[in-house]
Image 1 (tube, rainbow, N blue to C red):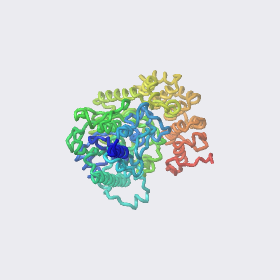
Image 2: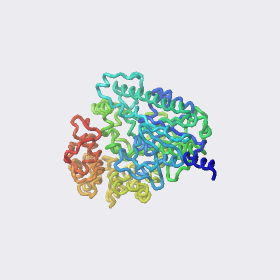
Image 3: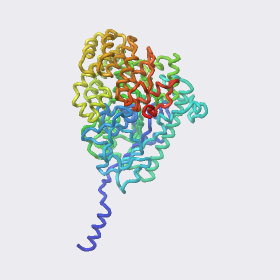
Image 4: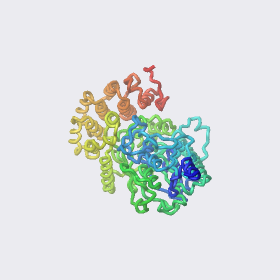
Length: 632
């Protein structure tokens, strides 16, 4: 071999051939935290002006119906990364008690991009409830950028902005009184479910300031792409990671917690991958399970089987196909220490809200939420009796199902579930949501502590193996939608079942009916005192306490003393807070000595203990960062 050929081979090994195709676009996700559509003028009248985001839309697309599937960050972000509905794969609880594995055979979507030659970066937030797939990121850090890639390598870059995060509204009374906002508080729009007070107006104005600040930060990233000569090769997505962040936004499965802004700037060199004209509004529904599959489709990467989403841009996507998509699914389970179980279905102009435990009031104590002065004032005004019906609902039991015409009632204060003229819509949406939770199947029909013990090593497989059991539990839960006399026989069967989870749901249904179910008080009293399952005993005490048939204190304290599980203990404490703070109200004093040492170390339990020990109702350590005194 001559010296010239040897030199060529040496060059080939020293400098690998660039195998990246020039016809693959880059993708950038720019994510503002805690933003629903209701605070940006381009999506909702009365919101903040966002000229840099509007400029992205002018060179691309504005999606008027984009939805986070969950109203809180860890669940929403896990949905984004997995393209799977969280209650199907066990990632629905915020903050996670157990980090669960990805479904068998699936990886987080950036790993597929990386396998295809993309450079993947995240700056910086993760917050996953599932184990991160190997090879997801080339870099994830506060300095991560596309600039670390090889020359010519396509990239996916994800960047989050905390400027609008809930914590930005955790200002003090002193700051409220001394620091002015750039936005005039007298000019902002206050939701009709909020009291129209100077403090609420100040909070909205400050939030508008934050949105305008993040608009500039997003513009800065776009400027960097342009200065690097990459803008016209890059799809730039801007969206909120879920709704928020004024009270009844983040953490609540209404439009205010789920309906997010989304715009996509379409690069000139890849206009063929977006079948709309620049500046158009897309009126089809897209949801977070669709976002990862959309990026894969834009990159020309095969979408893996086993995901729940479908692409809304790229090859094979037409405006007609997306316009036909008119529904989005939502879920709300646990938010730190506060439990709920709500599923939603938005279809067309209607949102159907199914509260499986409607006696768990929206305004139930959640330490992190109540750091905000607006939350504190809202509750104080309710306790003083100075609120109207729409403003009071947050602190009262909900109906098991609600139906809202979002076009006529964008703030969702007029429940149409009892309206005869909307009966057909209600029935249709009820059936569709029932099919959704049964077909997944939805793991949340087991208590979280049961899932941690039996399911979280492989949640998806567990769900498939227990499909029929879950369907039975859903059927029991749906007894609350019947007239009591129609439901009575089914409730009795559940309460006398040998299956603890069926007894558990039978008691929840009793609590949904309240005094109508008083005929089961004697049986519930026996269950509260003698059932082998601590959570079944707790639900019996909860039902009896809500109807005033039995003081639940002794049962709850006994269950707390016996529980060795932090997750189970937190579920019991959720009931204790409800029965202490809600109606009729019971004197329930709980401290660390009331709880087993093993359970007391659990952070959510610490949050609840901090609240029980607070003399003024404001925990001194709202996030549960308490030293365990008995361990010292």
